[in-house]
Length: 268
Ligand SMILES: [Zn+2]
Image 1 (cartoon, rainbow, N blue to C red):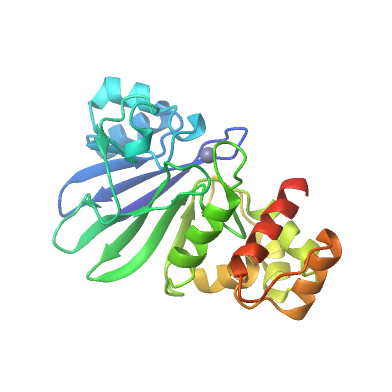
Image 2: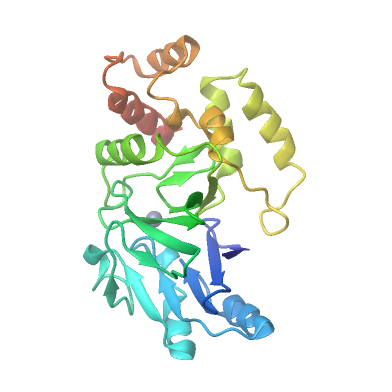
């Protein structure tokens, strides 16, 4: 699968992706924000647009649908609960469905409620191996999505703990927004000596989001993302969160730690 990332320069720092399966000769746009740069890119490549998938119903993930449907009439996929909410979405997808699928490569749908209740992620599988995850507003570099526009932090905690914690370290993360630097600063506000987070802050200064933006694997994310450390947080991290929230947690309930982190991030 060929992956192309577009930084949209939107106020919310959205990313749109184009995924092209050369075995099929077909192309999908994930979370199109603006149709114009996608049209330009497709014309340069000489490609049609066969599919759109919107990870969820928020307008910053769907605003390019109208222009692209008028130009290319693609099939538009979304969570069943988002059909009727997303412009032109007609084809519901459910957990385990495969799209843009050829013999060696496909995208598998994950049902990932929390940011909203109609949110899906896409897992790229090639030659039987899980290679990359497109996470919309579920998981970001060094953070997770907020839950105050139609979501629920406890449900997001369950999704991340059950579906993302078991994922292999080698899987690459492609999120829906560039909140990397802000999220790293949040990590450092709780874990100021985190060597990986300090190194990433320095590394980020050398990249612009629309240039050669680096792509992290989950091994790195498990170090710099406090929301991926809820199962066994270090005593320093626990102490920092306890100090800021006044709450302590039952270590058997990592979900509660996650929700405390989300509440802190909302106010941060
Ligand atoms: Zn959203």
